[in-house]
Amino acid sequence: MRVKRYEGSTMKDALDRVKQELGPDAVILEARRSRGRGLGALLSILGFGKAPVFEVLAAVDVDGDADSRGFQAVTWVPSPLAVQEEARKGAAVEAPAEAATQTMAEPTMQVTTPPRIPEVPPAPVISPSGPLATLRVLEREAEVRARAAGLSPEMADLYAHLVSEDVAEDVAFAIVHQLGMDDGSQRETELFREWACERAADLVRMSGPIQIVRDRRKVVAFIGPTGVGKTTTIAKIAAGFALFDKARVALVTADTYRIAAIEQIRSYAEIIGIPCEVVHSPKDMEQVLADLADYELVLIDTAGRSPNNPARMYELRNTIDAAMPEEVHLVLSSTTRRRDLDNLMDRFAAVGFDRVILTKLDESMTFGAIFNVHAKCAKPFSYFTNGQSVPEDIETATQSHVAGMILAKWRIAGGL
Image (cartoon, rainbow, N blue to C red; front, top):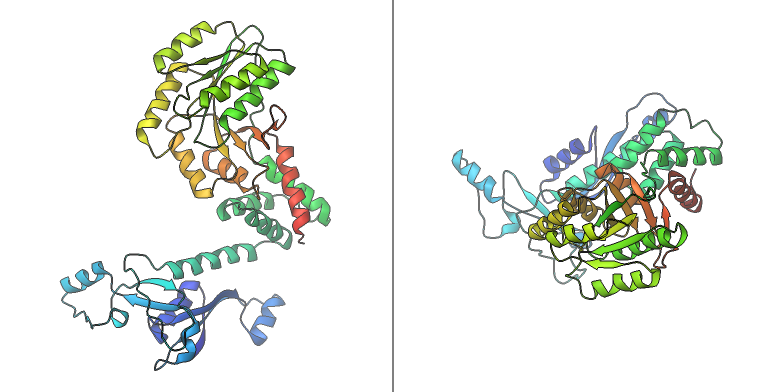
């Protein structure tokens, strides 16, 4: 086995050298950002100007060396588009019998981990359709490390904490960049943490709770995907206004699709002591709202919709248009994956919403959804929920609450 370390001013430069010298069968053993080695590294640490470099440790199996079988195996096959392009240019493209040894102009790669069986060399079959995923991941990781390396120790610690809490890397960097414009890093450690958490939370907009005016009706609608706790959240809000504020509250449900949905919200309404009406169409919505003209707050529960079903989203939009609510709250769960949250906000934007409620904070291991959602849609939060109890487990979303969450988990995680 031949093993060699390469350096480059960028990760791409280092990886290009690997491919040039060791060929496409090279295996990436390690990739990291470094200040070099020996005296050069020492001078850099002391501030004498050696720029950071990117190091890649790579290996290639020479003459089928069996010792390499424990490493990840990389199999290269030609891209069909690359083969056609070379054919048009008149270049000769070799096509040996075994795909693992083919030559190509624009290779694709997939990394697999072969079983450690000494007697049988691994022979993974790789799809030629994917991009150079491994190299891109390495480059991305190097970029993230480079970002952190350019920050002060205090800001780097905050950045690392935010990323560990599932805040998207770009969002976390934007936060520390914004905070870096203020002179907060000169504070003592605990004071810096408190300042940083407050400033980070200040970047998240809050709308405050629903406000009503006595003897004037307000219509508020709630939309969102299935399973986020929308109906329970509406019951909590209704109970708060009816039981504590003594307001005239009514519930309307358009959720006629989900099994037992009507029975659930009617049960809540009966316990709270308020009316609950069911609508089956936009025409019904107009009539029901006319009948509820004397109520001060009308809360509309819509059916949970799959954002990937255009027909259902169109029906939801018609329902909202018929209700003409003064506020539309998108209800999302903090336990939803980041990519799915992005998709949900994109799809429900076609329906229209002006506030966000984030549920199930008690079930989430991280608070990253708060920053990711706000960065994506730029809509203010109205409420956070943290349990199933009605009406207790809901609170008005505030920046001080967000700051407290960041600080509490930062203290537990340590750092600085």
